[in-house]
Each structure stands twice: as C-alpha cells, then as structure tokens.
Image (cartoon, rainbow, N blue to C red; front, side, top):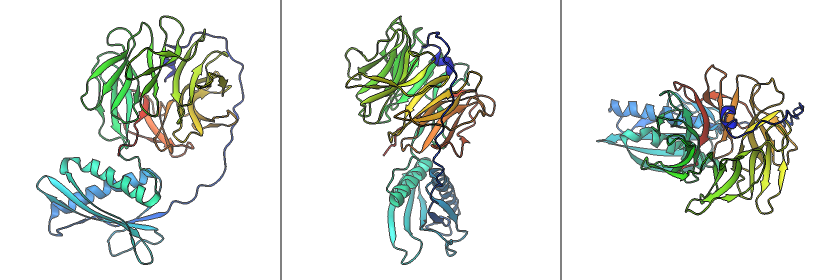
Length: 419
C-alpha cells in the first residue's frame, strides 16, 4: 500500500523516536548457476523459411524466460553441431506450423557423457498463443532440471492511471501483454489475486464508498464482496482460498476482519483505538502480519490467530505494506528508518531479530509483492521519475523495470503459479 493509501486508514499519532536499522546481511556468495546450452531451435522442414522464423521467435522467448528464472547460466550455441563448453544440460527443439497450429518437439539432455535425455515432450498449440507456449516450455525445463516450479506463466496485477482514473491492470511476469481489467472510471486500489488465480479482490470507489470487490478474471464480471459504510480494503486470501482478510472501518477506526468467501458476517480480529491495516497471511494461515499505529508511528506487527496474541516486529520511523514470503521466513515491507528518508523496501524475519534493507534511496520504493516461488520481489519505484513497477531478486540484487507503461503504476500483486 502506498503512503497515500495508508493515510486513508492511519490516524495521526505521536512521532516515534528515530531508530537505527539493524542489518544482517549473510555475506555468503551464491552458488554458481549450472550452465544450459541453448542451440538454435530448428524447423522440422529446413526449407520452410516461415517455420525457421517461428523457431527463432520461440527460442528468443524461451531464452528470455530461462534468463529471468536466474536458475541457469545460458550458453548460446551458434549452430547445433558446436557444443558449448561447461554446460550441465542442453536444450534442443524442432518446430513446425501446420495451418493455425504450431508443434514443438523439445528435448533436455545431459550436455556431457552419454547425453542422456532428462526431459522430452511434444507440444501442440494455436499459433496465436506462441508466447504462452514458450512460457510453458520454460517452466517445464525449470521443473525438469531443478525440481522447482517455474514462474513464467504468472502475472502481475497493479494500479495505473494512464486513463486519468486509477484502474486495475495486469501484465505477464516479463512485462508483456499489458492490459486493463477494470473500467470503473473511478478510483480502484490494492488488487489481490486469489490462490487459484481466477479471482481478484480490490477496492473501488465507483459507488461512492470504498467497497471491496471480487472480479472474476474469466468472465470479467465483478461484484461487491463487502460494502459496509467506510473503508473496505482487501488484505489477502487465505492459502486455501476460502477466506479473505480485510480492513474495515465501519465509520470508526480501521481494524482487521476476516470473512468467508461463501458468505456470512465478517469476524473481527483486532479492536484497536488507532488503526490496524494491510493484513497478510503466513503460508500456514496461523499468523497475520499487519501495520498498526498502536505504539506510535505505523509498525509491522504479527497476530497469532489461535490465541489472538500480538507482537511487534519493527521499530523504524514508518512501516507499511507487509507481504509474507511464500517460504515463510521473511516479511517484506516498505519503510524508512528516519523521518527524512525516502521509502525503501526491507525484509524482516518472523522473530523481528533481523532486518535487511533491500533498496537504498533510489527514488521512493513501496508496495513489495513476492513471486509465488519466494525468489523475487515486485515493487513500485519512482527511481526513474514517475512511479513504475520494478522487480528484483529477494536479496535486493538485479533490479529491473518490468514494463514501461504510460502513466503512474503502483501496488503490484503477483499471481500464483498457474499449472
């Protein structure tokens, strides 16, 4: 949540004492990535020039996906008969187009020794969905080589004002296929994907009140999920997708609630005279991280759901927008150590004993969102001028602009892995 959004729910409070940030950087060098040899993809019919161009286009997208996965050192081979040195695996493909369909024969093999096949698959797809096919291939290669799920088929929802209004937009994880999801012609805020990726929760002012909406991504239809008087802001879905955390004000101070998606009244989780907001579930759904000004300036707190006990994790000048990592060890948040600092991205471990600053004053950096594999963070940043969506490794390294979308973009949220 940006500071502008947070001010909707936080009441004025006394300034907290300035604190020093405790950094606990590991200092351990990352293990080198295994090499993946990538020769040109071939056309099944060498005389079909159009097929050769499609094969090159497919390889370019797959290569980009494998590079962005940061699991391999890509070793390009100019020709198939010229093996790259030092590779662990070798990926080859043959492609053909018949009518409006494309077919691909893919083979991942050991690059040395007996060149045993590790993974082999045949794909057939409508030609208009070639980019989606490339993402699927990249995810299959990651899974076969590492045993881990790839994220090439994930998407990122965000807010953008290029139309003059704040609407919900979405793009592929690599910044392609940017499109608008809502046309509320009002103010839309804080999109949140459901765990199955089929729905999106967000707050809309289109009826005058900040109502919490559920958008069906297949039909494009939205409905009011919570329309109580005052703030209705989505926090996050439970991991099983059955419940939704919310911030409700009910005309008074904002507090945390949880509501079953099948209906029924919202259950109150906190009762605080100040403001509690932006809740996020732990992966096991037993704890909730949230922002509260109960101790002065807003700080990150954790609520244990079974016993309702609350503990404070941070002691900075200002904290906002917690996001619990899918692996459970870290909570990312936006914050600043001192009043005059710009907002930056931090992570704190679940004990509060370690805080690591990931960005360092290059513009204002806010709204962290974890990738579903817990290896990357999307965030909004003004480092290049207007607010845009960036992504970096989970340790703060390798930041890159996701897409140069006109207008100001903010509050990204990463979709689950779609199988």
